[in-house]
Length: 338
Image 1 (cartoon, one colour):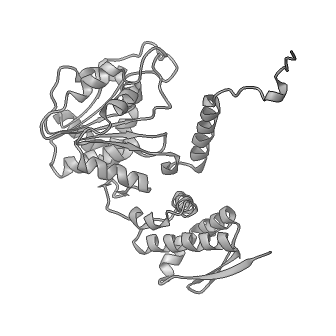
Image 2: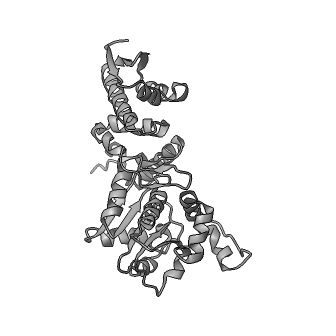
Image 3: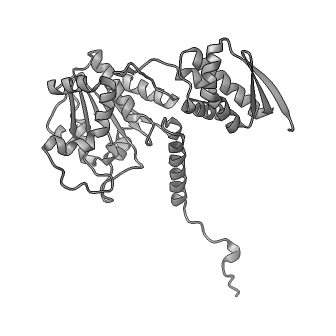
């Protein structure tokens, strides 16, 4: 191999090295495949060899992973992928921001943390501002982290209630007449919110708080005419609100309350003649004091690696559609002779 260089990365603790390698060395194999290098373990040292630039990037990735492992962070495929992306963009200095405070502990004792720099900024915005808009593609943790922040605020008693709401709009298919009472009819629309609350509180605790009225999960139509004080309010799937619904929701804000609005402007299920309330709100509220607009990207996706590739593929397809049609080259234009 031409211009092959070798570099040594030293691990202070063998435990950190084990965490970085992962089961069956899957994390190391992923770095080797992504950057085209060879990594060999010698005691607490890692020897990296390959083309100079690729070797440099692999060394920076390994150093970042060892730094995270030393802070007790879990090293998984998603974390490795994200770190390689940061290194390739020249942003590896942001790695230290990834090992931050726990947002919330689930009912089973699992700590919930922001896993990317974008998610970190999102959580900071929620803590700092009264209203936060979290906009981004599927899998970026918009709703999940917002629910975690709501549960944390509720446990700390900075709010008395958690209110979760979303517009009841079908995703391109008609569900028809659903059986049961009103709650049964709206539950399918609110299921993702229930799922997140079940994980963080446990089904029994969730049921208890819901019966007391401390936690409310309801369709957006239920918000009209109310003023919500001392509450943490989350509006999910906000891209499916109309401009009028969004204005109605935002003006429900009461004293001591916090609002988080989440949505993905690429997944609008409204009729084509309706403007998305989320798109409109991003335009209208830009620069308003105490309101933050956080834009997450495919780099913040924390689901399966394929989800990130699917989102990127759709983004490229959209960009191609938006390219203006170019005029035909001059050589093909008919020359008119006088």
